[in-house]
Length: 260
Image (cartoon, rainbow, N blue to C red):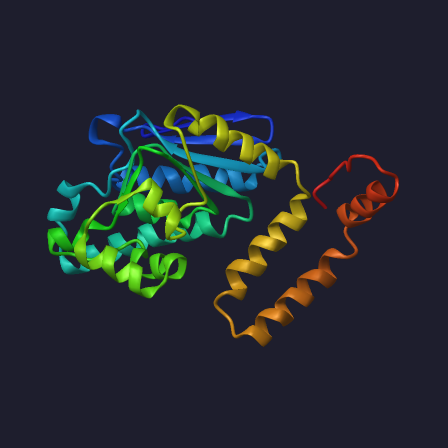
């Protein structure tokens, strides 16, 4: 795959997608959002890809937000469409059916923080900074930051971040549950790709169903979510991977997953 604003590489079952606009701190413009959608759809369809790492080019920034020049020119109608188009791409990432790991190598502000939150897991360099500074521009988050943030860190902490617009250090992000791990900056990509390789080695159908159970179940009442889990458990019980996994366990060998 060839893009103007992204780099896409693949090594075995792991794909690495790099937002490649370092001169503007990897800010998200319309073209980047569109290319991110196309890249993720292609990786979703590629059966050889089992896990994805998403990062930003350079050492300063993961994604430092949306393109302010574009935002400043939006009309009310265009602004609504702009936000919705971004939300759809971030929803695609969240619901991809494959683990997407955000390797946050620097600033993750505004749309960058929202992008990281749409990923399955978040690893941060110790130099990373997070924030939703939209209030300082007289606007609000548009890519579901006001919704994903409280779901990750709780209402009170989310409101503090949203209303102050202040940046949060990597250590604080870990403390409040915004990121899964903090690692030295020099080790970030090695740790992210190692984790991705671990996830890529798991049974693909089971991974997909776990992601579905969690994402869908969190939006349901408990009883309904439990019913979803039983339905997925029943559906996976007859798969080739389940038969192979149980057989491999009993035979004390490594399972050979087929993804079906």
